[in-house]
Picture 1 (cartoon, one colour):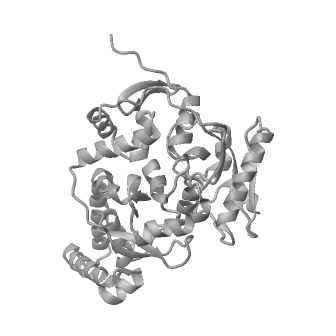
Picture 2: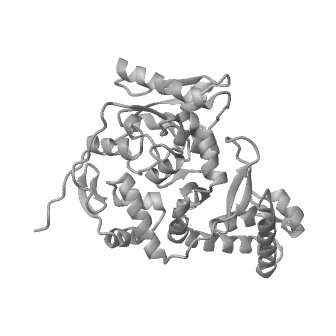
Length: 394
């Protein structure tokens, strides 16, 4: 008979989350790099959410903006680039090769083929012309260091070429080569988003050449990415892993076997941890509170969320596309949501049917004050707005 699987219940999973995701006070990080490394990746499609996710986990939250700016734009120790499920993330720089080979290559091939096809359908120049323009644009970016799409188009006027998209359909439009090409080059790992045009909440970015990295075999890269994620977020089911990575289930299973992952029993069924991580995990020193932003990697980390998020709370906290809004946490569970009003006030509401006690309310209010102190006069509106967030700010 095979070895019996160790059971890991919800309480232990929440304890792991508290410490490994640096949410309990004693686990908070000293730098944004430590935060990103602990979480493997920060969702980067909403710029403000990156800073809010870091600030929730730094021991000195007042350092959030200057330190995250330093990591992203001065030291380049953190890189904003496309990753899993064709989504923009912020990764530690040393992870770029792993992410690119494990998830980017297949997506990049599809994106380039789609661009060439769309241009051909519209009667725009062909793939040979596109390659010439691409090489010219990359050379210009190397000269400039960083540039907006408009600045690149001034250097290489052919980037201004336009073509019709989805002609005759309700969503038809006109695309400019520069916007589509930069997207493809981003997925291919050739360019990254640089310093924004405005403040840390701005979604308008300059572009820069991606840092050089070794080309890894895709299967090796998949194994390494899965190992890192399981170490941070395990235990997890195959469904969790498939959802987070965007891979085929065959890729997930091959990578699990390659790293020697160990099966454990969860309430949802069979889960997996990295080898040596099945023993009982320590618990945080005391109950803890956190205010996490929209798209936070902890709230979005698993497909199966019942062990930390009651199903009844989801309609208020998620948008129609499945993007989570700002959440209030108490001792490892989502218990409500929060928002920032136009005057800067941080407001929150408990949604859990059983409510929370005085200790929890006091701790949550302290986190709201801590957040307000470092955000200061800046106004942060989530890119994907959810029912509760809209209601709290109305």
